[in-house]
Image (cartoon, rainbow, N blue to C red; front, side):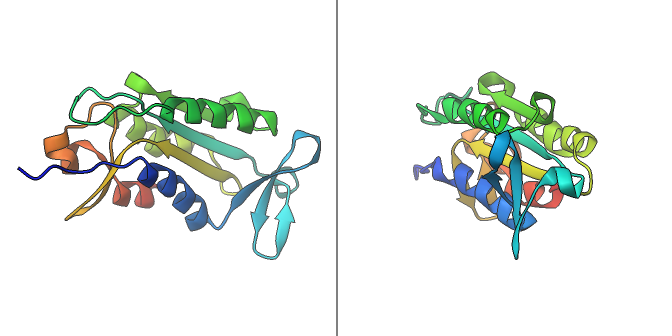
Length: 166
């Protein structure tokens, strides 16, 4: 049986791609303010009437022991939350799912329901995912807490779902 190699880098890459797809980056401004970096310059979300809404996911261990444990994925997600709060993002606009909380259903619900309820047209959406990822024949998939290594195509978070939801 061919052994699959799961990698953590794909999760970080996914978060970076989400920001690139939106054409928006985050930059610390003065006085704890976050600025949105757009083509042609930087503008404050407050001046534009928007805010930053963030979904942060981190997984060190998985229900399926075939996935290798990670050491710092949950810490990375918690550290990102602290950073976002330190530059002015409100706690109510940040959803943190780590460990056993980061099931496929909860992450999909946060992407499809929570983000839609929190984010408005002028808001910037920031998605950070620190976990394993796999490129399969039918697309790219992120490993969630309850993902099945033998059935990742149906039990992992697909890149196409992430892209279409954002």
